[in-house]
Length: 274
Image (tube, rainbow, N blue to C red; front, top):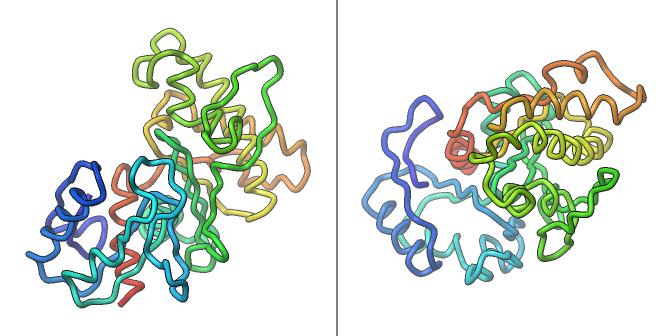
């Protein structure tokens, strides 16, 4: 998704470009920005991606499972067509930034955004800035406690039964033989399993990052009742330890910006680059 704007409610133009090969995709992105005047560019990308500005590989995709994209130079592609400040971060960090500025995390100093789609990832904003260090957060790859009796092996090509391997849209499709949108009579059972694994992951995030809200987006998050059931199981897993009134209701919420969290995140990153 490429767009020009000043915020989620001031997007002057946008276009969706299919993600194919790096050469084809980035050429289309270059064409889009070469034809427009911008003050800065924010890149909110799938990962893993090098986000350390001091690193020689800054702006390049690293060990991604997306075929053909390892080593793709996102930053270089944009620098070739625009002479403006460019920020690079993960799509989920960008979405967390957008939700903290304009969405469900307004007024919070620590905001966690988790997307549950084909993959599963999380980003965080602490004190107005996205979280990163030696690597950026890879919350989808934490280990999670298995649901009793669950023999599903998980689909993560790196870790098998990590959070992404057990609760992503890809995992759901393999487990049930069809995607979330076509679960039909199995929806309630799927929500029960999804909520268990999501709550197991969120349990770790609550105790390590102390977020004031967890914003959960992505296609799987549209399953009826998934937000409140995940919230309920999270509080249950905390077993009364350091549970705050805010944890009990409306702590795991849908994105305030809907499906625009990602593109708004790229705009927010561009603003920070300026």
